[in-house]
Amino acid sequence: MDKTLYTIIVHSENFAGLLNQVTAVFTRRQINIESLNVSASSIKGVHKYTITAWTDKDTIEKVTKQITKKIDVLQAHYFTDDEIYQHEIALYKITTPTLEEKPEVSKIIRKYNARIVEVNSVFSIVEKNGMSEEITNLYEELRALECVLQFVRSGRVAITTSCFERVNEYLADREAKYRRSKEQQE
Image 1 (cartoon, rainbow, N blue to C red):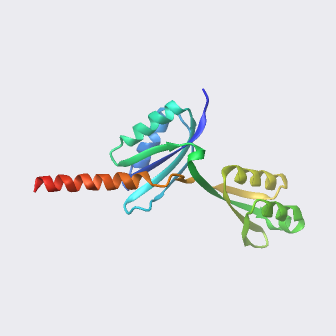
Image 2 (cartoon, helix red, strand yellow):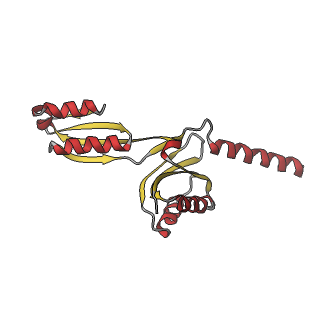
Image 3 (cartoon, rainbow, N blue to C red):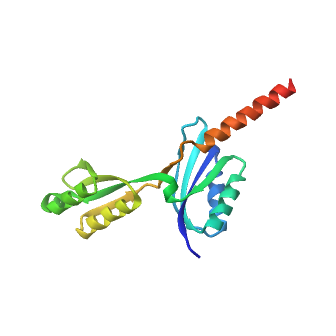
């Protein structure tokens, strides 16, 4: 079976317990979630879940349909990497003495367009935002210089490359239907 990294974007109302329901869909199908990011969306009262997982097209279609059926979910759509713009952020805690003693550490940081956001006598913090592969490559190069004390990365954040936000159209359509039904009742 040929697996692809898919990104599912879910828009939902903000109710407790929905995250558990969404992740349970993946668990039942024994699909490992690679990254998960949940935040408020641009629409008041609507949250956006960005979930990535390696699977095949048939399975991702089924998972997306199951998530869409959840009561508090407004919409769920899946995308391949060429249909979205995505970024991650990572923080690297490195030893300050190594940073000062090995000029190649600074060269690597500049090579990846990362930036040093904190420096003290014991450690320095480097911040990198960008594509997953760049974040991993920077980590590998810093690790090879034996200067990494800690490393953490966020989940993917993504927006579609299409000119419209599907959830906006959905909400506008829903509001129009609601107004028509109210007018018919009067």
